[in-house]
Amino acid sequence: MSPEPDGAAEALAHGTATLYEASGLDCALDPAIRPAWPGARLAGPAYPVTLHPADNLPLHRMLERISPGEVAVVDAGGAPHGFWGEVLAVAAQVRGVAGLVIDGGVRDVDRLAELGFPVFSRWISVRRTAKHDPGRLGVPAVVGGVPVRHGDLVVGDTDGVVVLPRDEVAATLDSARRRVAKEADYLRRIRDGEATMDLYGFRDGAEAP
Image (cartoon, rainbow, N blue to C red; front, side, top):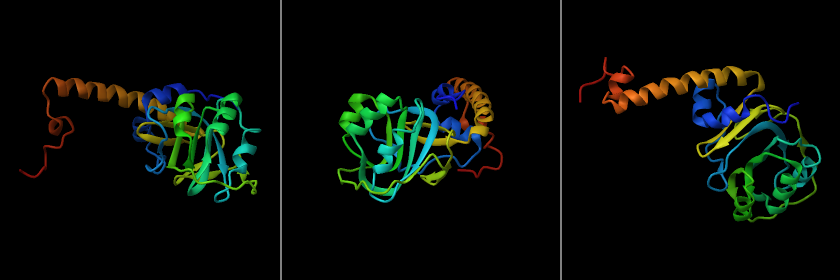
């Protein structure tokens, strides 16, 4: 598998909002999963991980298996524990990991920001974790309500996180390009004074004020 699938950089440039609309898929993770630090952005093939509640041993195991350029996408059951921090982030950077998306908590966020390691999480939490259960690595998972398979394209930015199935990436990017061009034309017309009610054809049948 290529560490960076065709289109990852372009997908990140388009942004998650455009990708979500262009895909026509229910591909957006729960909006409670947010950047752990301002400006975090990521894109790359997903490496799914499923944790036992409050146990982060699988994340240590994952770092021996994940490929450079991949994004760890982790189902931690939404638990408010600090599954990930500075030590794992440094280890991930050495491995070439592109980032982390976790339906759970992380800590050491100031250090994550200083390291420039992109993380998206449901919680910021100092609560400790156990290290007993091996978890499930590289097999399909459901994270933030969205199915994730190894190699799907995950993109995260300020607006949230989307996961595009591998076989939908090319079509989504093609649709995104058309959408960007159309919106550029709309913005030009709005700046020229055209009303959005007319631009989108909402005038016909709209109730009078």
